[in-house]
Each structure stands twice: as C-alpha cells, then as structure tokens.
Image (tube, rainbow, N blue to C red):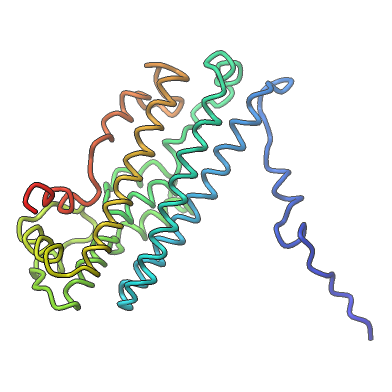
Length: 265
C-alpha cells in the first residue's frame, strides 16, 4: 500500500499560498502604496504574536527559576523590538499624499484596534479594562484580552521570582489585584537597590527589564513621529485623536521602580 501523504515542502510548511492571498487592497487600481501599508501592518501583527510567545516564555522561565534562559529570551525580545522600530523607516518612505490616496478606504480601521498590542501592554502591566470594550462580545480578541487582564504580569512574575531568591518582597505586591495597572512602590525600590549592590546575577536581570522598557518606549516614540510625518495632527482613522493621543503614551515607564532607583544608587 503506497503512502499518499504529501511530502512537506517549503510552501506547504509555511502556508505560502494562503499567506500571499491575504494582501487585498481596497483602493481602485489599486493605489500603489496600499500594498506596502498592508504588508507592513500584517508583519507587525506577526511580530506582536511572536513577542507574546516570547514574553509568556519569560514568565514561565522566571516561575521555574531559570534565570539564564529568561535573560536569553529577553535579549531575543529586545532584538525583535529593534527590527520593529527599523520597519518604520520603510513605512516612512510613503509620503503623506501617497497615504491619502487610499486612506479613506480604511474607514474606521486603525492600529488602535490591534488586540495583540493591547495584550502586550496587559502582559507588561499597562492594564485598563476599557480597552476590552472596543472588541465585540464573543470575539477572539475580546476573549484574549479578558484572559490577559486576569493573568499576572511579567512584573508580578519577577517579584515572585525575587521572593523565591530570598528577598523580602512585601506581601501586598505579591497578593495584589493583577487586573490593576502596576504601581511604583518605595518598599520594592529599597529591595531593588539591595539587589543592584549585592547580587550581580539578578542586577543583570533587572537591566534586561530596563532594556525592554526602553525598547517599548523607543517603539512608541518612533510610532508617534511616523504618524506625525504622515498625517500631521489629523484625527486617526479609528476615531482617536491620532498623534495627539499617541503622545500621551510617551514617557510612561513600564517598570517605574527600576527607573526610580537610578538616583539612589
């Protein structure tokens, strides 16, 4: 009896035919630059998926006290963030008039509606329940965000790791309501100063978290500048205030305690 199972090929493994069928411009013609716009944003969604995959892995590694592997994974995440920022250079080759040639076809579609980016924010401690309401009941996106809202953040996992390492992490942060945004803590800051002064291994882990925080802030800043360069101060397609809204997200550290201690070391 012959084996009729098709051999795995490059195309079948990566679903190339399906992948290449997903770029469907809405403009008449279509407008030349709409293809670039679609591909860039689809690639971003793939990177968001990978970031979630890697960040979840970091949390699991910290839970298993596998510090070295957690640091290795954080370095991978930082490299992905650099690639994501660099991709904005490609998008900025599109002039404002080239974007306007198809912008109206986007209707209410907006990056504001990226549930995967909101999931990344939730996982990093930037939680706000109002974000969930933007997605329909019963949708994959809403279910994913509700799950992320109820799960501990990366910072929660890090504090629990430090507690198992023998540091006197106060009970309040360990038992906090994980559906709330993470808040700075003077007690945690004192503990972190001790880590930096006496524990090279965990001080290095802290520095990788600072790198992650800085990488996310760099992404936000470059995203704002790209939007300003492309549409100026116009409102966003999803109903937001565009660059004005995005500017409100700048300068907010993900891990404020790690920044606060800089002046005390």
